Amino acid sequence: MEAAQRAFSERGYAATRLDDLAAELGLTKGAVYYHFRSKRAILEELLLRSQAQAHQALEEEGPLESRLLAYARAYREGVEPLTTLATASGGRGG
Image (cartoon, rainbow, N blue to C red):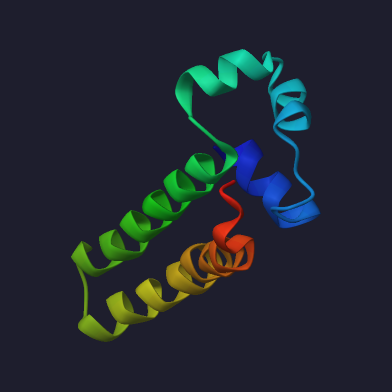
């Protein structure tokens, strides 16, 4: 997942090919498809993980102000860029 997020961030969602991602991971394209039905599914999983991290920030101990700031940072660094990629990829189906 980290490799996919890095690739999407560096090259952009549209320019990241599943072949390239598989090679980067030392896998075949078929092995990637075994775990994810499409490139879009990888993006959606990244988004779900980022959302969970943002929400986890609210569950931590400490003052509400600190937790809200941690949530905002996690959202800005994870959820927001991935949401932009998901929206930009539109209805192309991955």
